[in-house]
Length: 182
Image 1 (tube, one colour):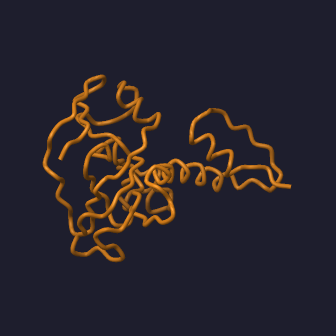
Image 2 (image 1 turned 45 degrees about the horizontal axis):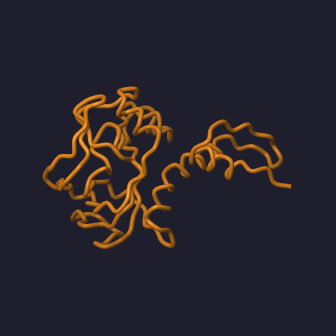
């Protein structure tokens, strides 16, 4: 398969590499589309904590090409998006329900191979079926989920005033999630 491959900051190629192998609880996704976000730019410039070499891309959508032996609820051909966060489930933070602070946190496209390739691997618990969205629209599910999570954590009462700074898709989703209702 072909993949974007960062050797290091400001040093990328398109390479040919083997299709990744999956474990019994993982799925292989044939990538249809992958969004490019600010994180990808910061990684390319060496401005983000990452592990080089790396295939970036964390806003991916595609169809399941292969399912692991123990995977339930998914079949080849399902259209899916993937949550890029990979947590251990065992550390202090994971055991307390705050897995975004996981001591062993990894992320598709940031610290392990992501979606700027023909195929990517994701754990079955981090894959979600999608319907009624184009591939391009579905790349916005990941940034939308970040905004929804932020709004949920704020738990603001209806009518609260919120200042949202920025001009990208995440800002737009943040606005939609925190829209003042009357």
